[in-house]
Image (cartoon, rainbow, N blue to C red; front, side, top):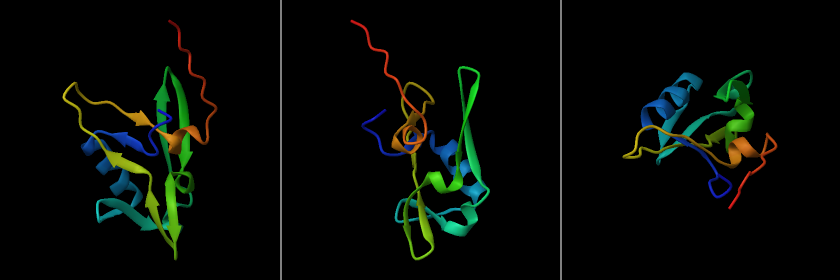
Length: 100
């Protein structure tokens, strides 16, 4: 979704990913020591193909050695879903196939 800056997904999944990376919540944002992101990665499997984002690519803000992760919880009444926003799209070429 080109109108979404972050990776948004089910709260429980986002929390598991962030905690596995070593992040903590501060002011509603997931923060982590930027050095902790070296060697880390998160992968999404779409249509049987794996798309991996390294730890540094997950960061949207870096200030004085602290990074803010581009992860956001999003729970929907229709069930679990992910929005792969700019954090995902800035690494991977995206083609929108829209037909009338």
